[in-house]
Image 1 (cartoon, rainbow, N blue to C red):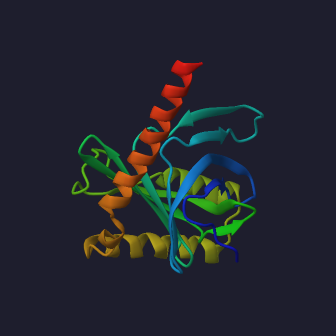
Image 2 (cartoon, one colour):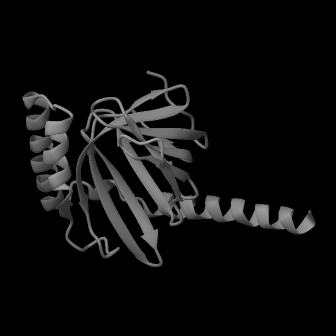
Image 3 (cartoon, rainbow, N blue to C red):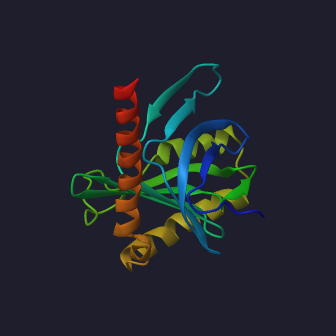
Length: 195
């Protein structure tokens, strides 16, 4: 499988199990690439979300400094997002990533863990249980896949209890995410003043 290079702008595609491309991020910057993961800064990325069964979509933008880890062999991805001095942690149950044609792709499996208060030490709670139950029926998740997702959720809870995910929290990368975005923003502001 090909890999992106550091500082490369890529697209991220999130699919549902039936192949529906439900969310796209344009264009996060690659911060780090290892044999285990790819880490991107998504600050400033435009997000396009497609509604199921509709041609309508809506757009938003990531405004906070944010680093996002995609794992080659893990069934989740991990986001650290900074607001003021607080950090939000978001864990998304998902397939291991696949990278091709300058696009990082994964399948989203609905369940997530989040600390809602933007405090890294605040307990993470599992959310979107109802979405997982509904989609597992609507999208016909095979039993083996449902079991894999449930086991992954249990594994994440164990990793959280044992602080095993802390090793990915990288304040320098989080700061770099904000610095790159702010430098680009200042450059555009200067250019607009000249024009």
